[in-house]
Image 1 (cartoon, rainbow over the protein chains, first blue to last red):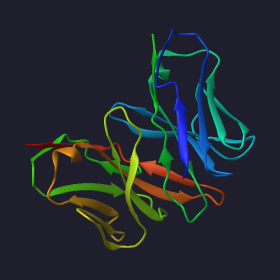
Image 2: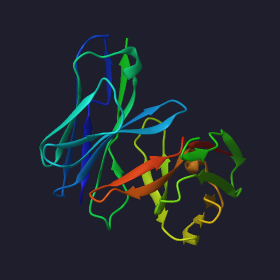
Image 3: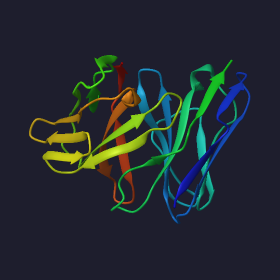
Length: 113
Length: 113
């Protein structure tokens, strides 16, 4: 069966520090991968998605970047965090067109101080 | 105007009540409609999905879609305290290579004893 791992679960970082969040998927190949951010009262906002190694689509301009160095690995990064980067970050994967739903990781709660 | 509108609640009901959760949307290109359940500090989990107007039932849950009105609903029968969570509606748009989900802000449900 497929599983998705996301870490760390919580993170407190100072303003201006770098960020690296990692997500890996097991039990499937060539998944579509997604990074979402969830802010209180604002729902889930799609940040990036990837349909293959090295292929990244950005949905909103921001202080973050994403990379997919391996088929089942998706990384969210920032060179210098801002206070506004605080939030709950979720990684998700989906399969082919006939598997429309996303499976989400357990999320990372990031607090920038 | 947001593409997907959802009342944030909170909605408080007694155990055993029938719960009705609703979303409206503006983009007629959305092709599939989903409901996710999210417990506090966890990633969302897929409850149900449907693609056509009408009803789809799964145990105590019924998903209803009215494409002509751009309105979807989730009904929960015989609600239980374990149903207390945030419920997110999501709409699927295919880009050709990936499915992109647009989420509502979520409705927080509290089922009391």
